[in-house]
Image (cartoon, rainbow, N blue to C red; front, side, top):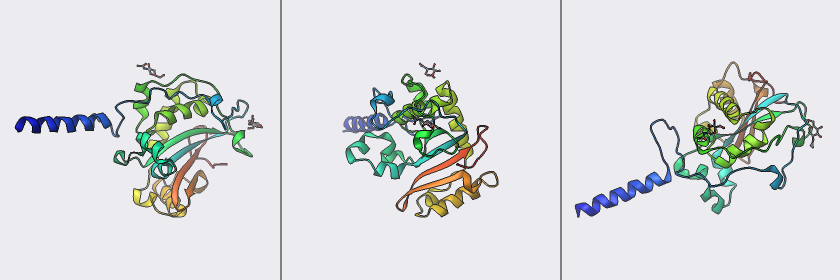
Length: 226
Ligand SMILES: *[C@@H]1O[C@H](CO)[C@@H](O)[C@H](O)[C@H]1NC(C)=O
Ligand SMILES: *[C@@H]1O[C@H](CO)[C@@H](O)[C@H](O)[C@H]1NC(C)=O
């Protein structure tokens, strides 16, 4: 009796560990295994393009409200995404840091897909997983956007992490409000006086927050988004 109880307990603990490994210095869940392949190749993606000639005038930090993103996926795809498992509790995450051209008439006028790069290793993915909990996203953003301004992925993600962590994020109560104005005002108040209105964009999907965009000049001071 005692023996089988212990066995059940061990099985439950082992099962929980297989779902997410959490060690002392982690502040977020991490999968027991990354996908075997998460390299990115823009040439093999329909709807991707390259822009090597656009000049970077400013930077946009795109933040994604994970519950809204996950709700756009099919159930099958959602089940595959660690980011989308409700028990992992991801809210606002970094979508990417985007080098932007001045006065771009459309999205194709921004720098994009400047180099093809090797798959980031698991140590690297783990290092930045709490701000960007998806190996596919981390790889894709590095190649699509990061390579147009940085030579090394570490430089790209260290600055991304630094500016994200410097930003004060409103409570979930505010983030789940149905009003872009309420969300934007909360960002402005919390990050006063440095942050200002034209450096923040709130994108809604109906009544739900989709993305928050914060703009910076090339010295990473807040800057207008256009
Ligand atoms: C790249 O961006 C520049 C301006 O930033 C634009 O003039 C050009 O058409 C873009 N190239 C492509 C292939 O879209
Ligand atoms: C992982 O990648 C980083 C960044 O490219 C590199 O500095 C590091 O040496 C790599 N680590 C391993 C274990 O391969």
